[in-house]
Length: 418
Ligand code: SAM
Ligand code: SF4
Image (cartoon, rainbow, N blue to C red; front, side):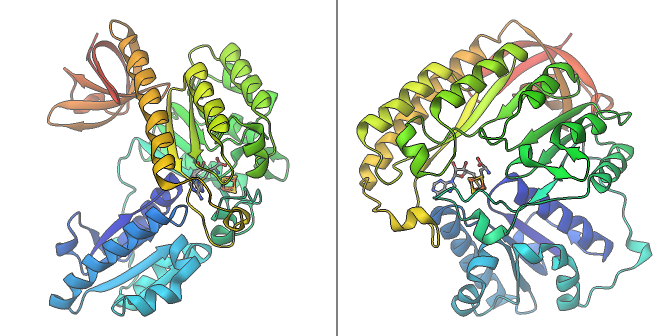
């Protein structure tokens, strides 16, 4: 049996798709990269914005067409949309065979195996593939109820996973060749399991021999502690990158978003982080066109983007989501104005990114080699920038390389090993 998996949405979804893939391998199913070669077509969905849901619908349209000519194909929908509107999906796409919502995601492999008559067999137990970088989920759900966000509704209450299990899973990954672990949670700062908080969890992970780098996301500005900032400064395995979603720089909008911090607090964190970790890259998320966002509110956000000089950012046009508090607020920024604000932030951010990468040309960067394709290594700096390295070979995979940066494009750097 061959399975094809399409993943829409965040790193957490990617992580869940990877885990599902590994579990299906133990049932003897093989991953294919072309939908037309699959017997099982899996769609992992996202509900964060209406656009992500539209993407899922159009994928399902294509999957249904394929199934008309290949009636034995099974179509499976998992994740946030499956949780939120599973029965609607089933009504609209009659050929969908199985729906598994995000709260039941741990049972997805078993349910798919049942549906497709796959049998667990020790012959099929596979070694985890030799990935250099792997995601490890440390928390599920979210209790923050930002007024625009559907996540607490589709992923449920915030729960921290067992710290000992996380340490065990990470050690196993490292034994299988993994060098970098990215810890995932909607608000990693509020991780708490018995005596562990997030900082002590990371400190314990850092003692794993052979683990070279630790990253994490997402950090919520309201909970980012001095203890964590200090740990980032002193723990050499922790990368100098933090994703710290600002969303807006207008205190009025932050309040309406229920973010529970002010712009002054946010700026204070940026300053502390930059003092503690001078080469840190701070990246962010921004929403434009939130209900009630005036031109002046937007100007404050635009000015903040200009002044803070983020290492990178994701900007989203506000999209009303069912059940959320903001869905009852008048969505009063016209679409054309949302598009304009989105474009302005993106243009400014691209300009800053180009300046940042241009200033890295001529420098030497320590990178971790993650992949190789056609003799070119794909690696990442400690700040998270992609670097393509010539003059390297397979044996360099998983190693730290010192690379002289020769050329820069907006999202990538190019260099040679020195
Ligand atoms: N937990 C993370 C945090 O608090 O920053 C973010 C998780 S959310 C899945 C990822 C990003 O999607 C958010 O930071 C926000 O910028 C964006 N987002 C969430 N809901 C949105 C909505 N209704 N419209 C537009 N963007 C949205
Ligand atoms: Fe959504 Fe806010 Fe939770 Fe992030 S912290 S997942 S934006 S509710």
